[in-house]
Amino acid sequence: MIWGTALDNRDRQPEVMDQPGLDPREHAKALTGLRRINTISRCSAGLFRPIEALAIKQTTTPLRVLELACGGGDTAIDLALMAKQRGLALDIHACDLNPEAVDIARRNAKARKAEITVFSADALEKPTDQSSFDVVYCTLFAHHLDEIEVVRLLEVMALRAQKLVLVDDLIRSRLGFALAWFGTRLLSRSWVVHTDGPLSVRGALRPDEMMTIAKKAGLEDAQIQCSWPERYLLSWARH
Image 1 (tube, rainbow, N blue to C red):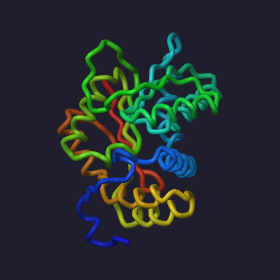
Image 2: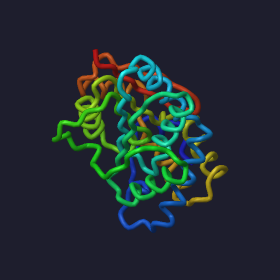
Image 3: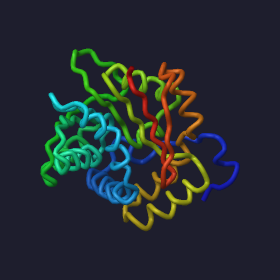
């Protein structure tokens, strides 16, 4: 394991799930493990709170929500089911560049009886159409990107979002690394998850680093909240 000063600086290394040619069965197994980990960490609940607050205020039309880099679609599905339980009108869309992830997300949505729209798209590509969303969010994606790509991601999210941008991700720290190392082994049998979990923390941003990047992207008044287990939620509201 990596401890101490090795985590002082960001160390992005290629993760298995980012590589082409990964066996689809291993990909699906890894996404299942991540679903279990994210369920226990309750990241969907943290994202839902600000979205719920907006949906309560917007009573005339459904709140349009877009997730970038959705993976297996678990978070978007969670949000759709929580909204349905609370009687809130959300029109949820989710996209991913990987066609295998899109297929898995669609199957997951059907299996869990969640109404979401899933499509293929590059999260870093600036929109060329006129479609817009009230809320644009991503979760566990920023740590996969170089700093210049994170700036572009935030710029794209701000272009697409009419009201709110949300970025949920890991915090690079010794505690975060320990949680990732032990947690992935306790909660998943996927060697991909065992490998990528600690690598994700090593490549993650600290809250102060993310705030600096947000300012570079023009999100001057962005805010960050930290939560267990070593996660941050960046939010930016359009005034």
